[in-house]
Amino acid sequence: MFRRLALVTGAVLASGEDPVASVCTAPAVKYWALDTPNNECAETCLSTKIQIAEFVGILTFFKGKPAGNESSPCADHNFHSFKDTHVFGVGPLKISMDKYAPDAPILAIVQGPVASVCTAPAVKYWALDTPNNECAETCLSTKIQIAEFVGLLTFFKGKPAGNESSPCADHSFHRFKDTHVFGAGPLKILMDKYRPDGVAKEILV
Image (cartoon, rainbow, N blue to C red; front, side, top):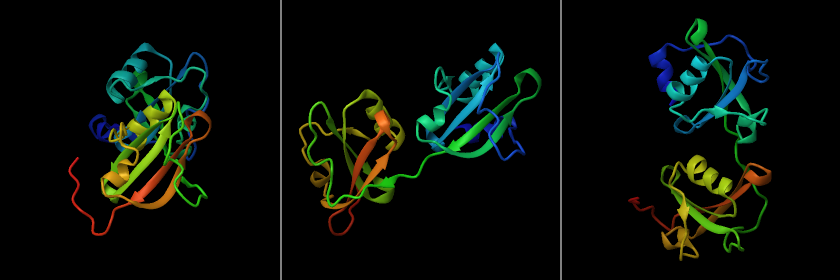
C-alpha cells in the first residue's frame, strides 16, 4: 500500500542506514501503521495536525494511529528488521517514515502438532495457504491473537474451525509438516502447518 502510494507522491529513500523515528522529540509524537499488503510496518514522528492528517488519511488509508505507550510499536508487532526510510513531501508536509520487515517465523522443536486439540478458552482457527500449498491450524485465546492470525499472518483467510476438529485434514491436508512460532508474550502464536495428501488439487476458496 505505502509502496504504491510512494510512486504517486514522489517519495524518496533517505540516505541514512539507521531509522530516524526511533525516538520522537516533543512536540513530535510517534505514529505507526501496519502495511498489510506489503507485509511491512511503518513508524514516524509527527508534530503538526497537517502531518497527522497526511499520514493517517492519505499515506496509510486510516490505518495509522498514535503509538501511545509503545516506544517501538513495529517491534512489538513482530517487525524488528529495519529496511529503509521513505521521505514524503517537503516543508510542513515532509514526513520521514521508517519501514520495517517482519520477523522470520521460528520453527518449534516438537515431534507432532500442538494445535490438534484446543483447551478452553482457546478456540481453533485455520487457513489455507494456497500459494505454498499448505494448511495451518492454531489455538487462539485472545482478541489480539485472533486479529494477528486473521489479518496479519493469513491476510484475512483465517477463520474459526467451528465444528471441524481437524479442518486441514477435512480439506485433504493430513501430513503434518512443522510448527511455526510467531511473536512472544500475548502475541505468541503456535501454528501447525500441514502438507496436502498425494497429488495437489486445485483449491477454490
